Length: 69
Ligand SMILES: [Cu+2]
Image 1: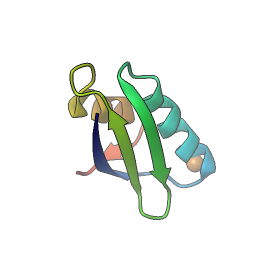
Image 2: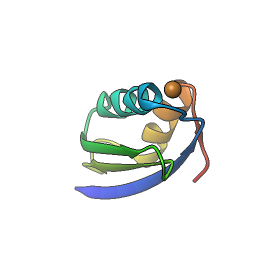
Image 3: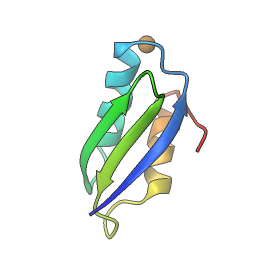
Image 4: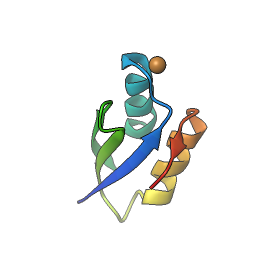
């Protein structure tokens, strides 16, 4: 398992937070996701042999938010 933190712009409220969490949690290989609305970041724990950071970032973008790092 590996844990990565990604910075996300565009999350305004608890609904956005839930949206991002749901989108990331739906990816195969992701075991845990925590979104911090105030810090504008998501901390994701995943199995790197199944999921990768690019897939996770793409899911955030697909949900309508901007990955900045
Ligand atoms: Cu919102």
